Length: 368
Image (cartoon, rainbow, N blue to C red; front, top):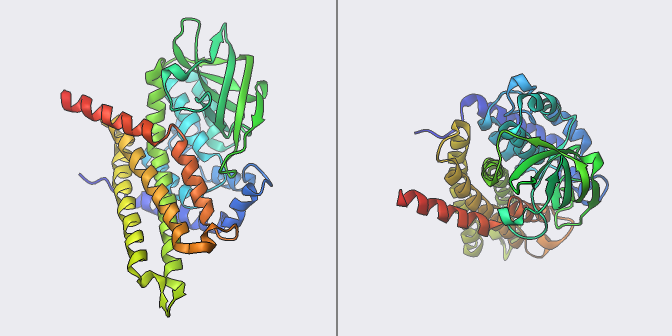
């Protein structure tokens, strides 16, 4: 079975890579890091104009209809440049939740705005520290009004709508759509300021239920699908980190030789390459499972998530180590990738959560 992308999607990838190389340099990322703006509005408008946000949204709802493989290709390129835009929150999470659990009326109302970038969406699941679980959901909707707190919420400070996991009067978990202007929002400081984070405090905020999928299983389905897309973003960041480390190792001389000629550096970068290729192969399998909506999707998602998180962590860490003392300085771009690796590694739950889920899924499959 061939899990590689088609020639058309490879052309999409090449175009996206060239565009982002020119339009999203490190200097643009640093504007968000320096606090000039929570995200790049100009880059967001250009991305929206090319149809990237709606890549996996069907054309009947205003999307580009490229499918999930197309979205995976774009996710990898967004990760390669650590783009300071709410792409993941809109395309991987908010849109997916509405496609999964929304009615036809809700899809027609909200998906076109998400696809063309005029509406920014986010997904609010966490209520403080800890990994996702049904027991961690304490926010509640009573008579169509939501009360409770959610934090951290990625891109919550700039979002127009939020998909929020909460319980109803019968204590059943569901997904609810809330307009963010009704929410009391507070900014949060994190390790990666290039991605907006906020705290939501809701006190009887009007909430509209997405009724076609309920229970924790619906939340987990959203997480599984997003995990594969985040894995591609992590693979892109890991490869960029490796390329940066390799380039520096070839040009930095010590004792009359490039430091890349020393075994200590060679072995480090070889370990990164092995981790990256393992993550890439698992991400490609995940792309197939997501595109085909295969029964293997939960297992593929957990596998891709675990390996991509590990690959991006080791790649961003060894990139700093390869650069030596200057790698820790503000002047070099190594820390941009290290920050993003930490941020993505905790999004949707940390590595222990996904490792436990992977083990549980393997045990269930093997027992069948």
